[in-house]
Length: 109
Length: 190
Image (tube, rainbow over all chains, first blue to last red; front, side, top):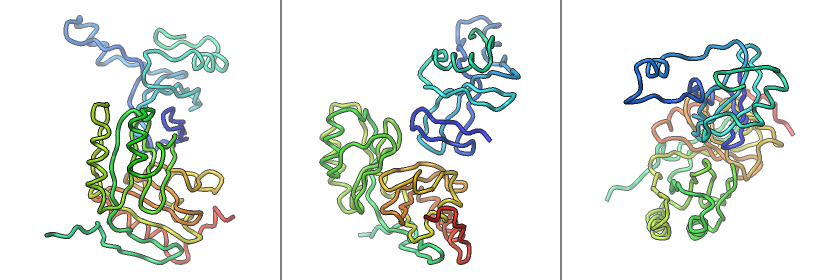
């Protein structure tokens, strides 16, 4: 079972207290964008075996959204960070690099 | 005039812990910037307490204030005073980006007390209830079996549990079941 530390309230919350919110750092392509961009935005998701970035909500707690960097292969959690960002902070990237040298995920590495 | 009554009208149960519905409790949800001095003062005027820090519950009896999230507080006042306190608070916060709403009748409050209170709560919520991890002065919002709930401690052996009024009957039955005689766990014995 996943245990994630909510960066908003500081609680180590287990999975049943949280709601999964899908992939993190999606860039929205809305009205006026090309059909290809819109299609990719709607349907194309990463499905990695290894480092992955996700959104979660502390639904049965403070109610806030946050980001998680974790490994889908080992369920290891590299860190959680604020939802108010468009890319992982440097300390999260460093923590992943320490454990998984050479990792990449979409445009991040 | 109709007389307001609480969800379960002081229902109670005695098992390995004593479970009681506490009756009417005035509650105001206050949302805004918690570092705002005006908000701090409004809380102090209503409850005599300062704005709480992360996961703090500053409660004495039926008056106090709890940290609900980084932009939300739960202000507790006696039920009879909630109207006046809310008016004063709204006036004090006019002009700032904040919102205060009376939610007293949307909630139910229980007390769970006795030396096995931690055992009872530990069966229902995915929370570490060891005395080192959870103490009076803290609030925890979580789930109680299948519904959302929150609790803090009045003293070392007494929990104050808050849930939505619509789930009051469910939560009371949960607490009763968890407090059945002979169901001590002893995981948190000091």
